[in-house]
Length: 293
Image (cartoon, rainbow, N blue to C red; front, side):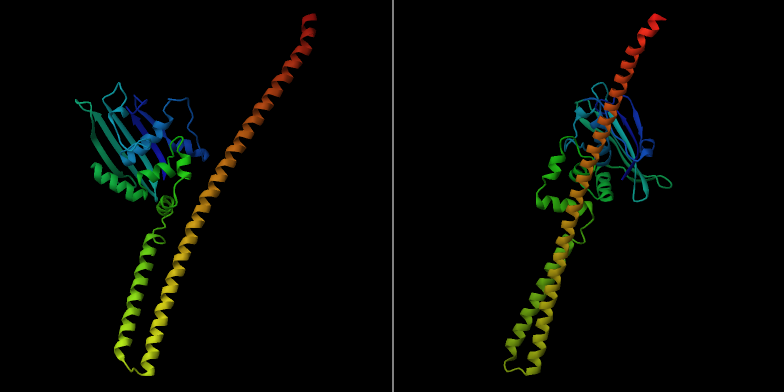
């Protein structure tokens, strides 16, 4: 997913409409969101998440408290690209007379060519977005817009939860549950085939050697097929381990980048301090000459 623009109005600390042009920000390849506590950094990520899923990243539900206290409604408009196509996700909510939250607009539009409205109801839009992105809200907030203080939660996912999420992130369903189901079905079918052969063999009584040889060959073939399906399952496990290794390497790379940036900043700060000290010493040295003059 590549963000293009984000407009926020009435959401948390964003009382007036603010539009962020990500095309300009991404010209350098990477950008950061900086600011003091409470300035709205997390609200930017919340706005993206709300536009896509109708829920906030920091909470599973959406309440009237998300609307700025001085406003009666909040709206978010998020334009992004995915799979070579451009989409617009819009949502607007308002405060009712009973001080409850009401959704007044939910719209998902394909802007790639002529604008085409793909969904204009909350449920339809939620389903369409999740199918397009391929991630549930919980996966999206763990892997794409990770909230503050939640990175350790991603790292501490249990084996089953991590495997399910990796399947969705890397589109490994064909190697995951589908392949496991296929293996189980194949094993069960071969077991039934072997059982049927054994019953037929018992019903033959004094069967000829040729018939017994054919039965034996069929049984060996069934056993070979079962072994092959088991080998496919082992390949699946190797794929998962490889994916987990890639995640670990990426995490180490990010940590090294942070350390390198910190070192460069400290080096620059030290160099500036040395230069200031040298200038000060030079001023002290020549100052008497200017006074005598």
